[in-house]
Image (cartoon, rainbow, N blue to C red):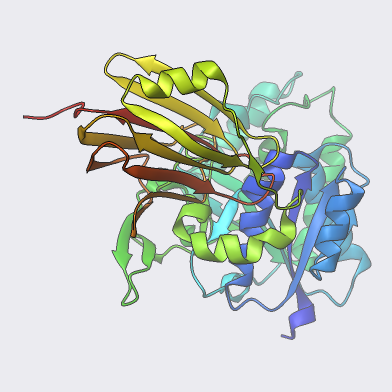
Length: 411
């Protein structure tokens, strides 16, 4: 099979957060694999600037004619399979999947006239929630009975792969289902997954290895390769695609950005939606400076990117700084701090920076993959310490710095 015979497709809308946190990791991690086929982004309203960025990076863009992204992405891939007969195999991925391995072997598993998907961890209510009308009970029973008896679990719609014949057949099924919206179905969260399960109830779906679209609920283990790189593993072997479902989307342990930070910073800048900027803040807001001073520190300098925000507040025995966007802050001791404890936290529901560092003289500590880490040092009056973060320009990641002159927990 030649490179032009197969295509990886991914659909995205115009939200900037989805661009930075889903599509960019998807593209960067796919390009780190040995996949050499076509990469096609299905645009559901992408701006002209985003489309231009993608095409400058030799990425194909198809502008969707469907309006509903979840179901429409499948319809668009089925149309592609029909109008481009040179294609042999296609895969549609959710944008919140990133590729953990340099080996891309998905299409080795694709053959025949049936779609291929992975099993999901749970059979969620949203699979049957779109069912309405007099056939609701019958269709719900079909989905549960037929799918569970054949596959032992619900199916994960985040990766759907197949030959062009399989996609054309699935496309016909989708059209028939869409014509019954308002009769047998309502358009809601899970409608796409419901349609997929009804197709599986017709015995038209087979299983892929779960490593191709892995959800962390199935259990992730970690090993380190000889270069010290973390390798994410499952019981079935190395994970190929890790699905960053909404419940773990911004957890540093699993994010692409914190597992491949140097590659993200080096190769991700071409996808940034804003130019790199650095603005000096010569006079920080008085409340901000006063709050920092309560812990025995004064602000030496602050630099940040355009659009950044920062807020400081005193909380018991510590000072917390919540900052958004790339920033660098130099703090100077005004009294002996023995110790100064700096705790660094990312927020579980918001993306943290790609790289976070604490610098003291020639020493620097890079914060790694945990949600919360701390360092302890000692400062004499006049000593300076620098705290800084780096992400892609315009990504606007958020972090919490907690500064204290004592340990929160010690014994």
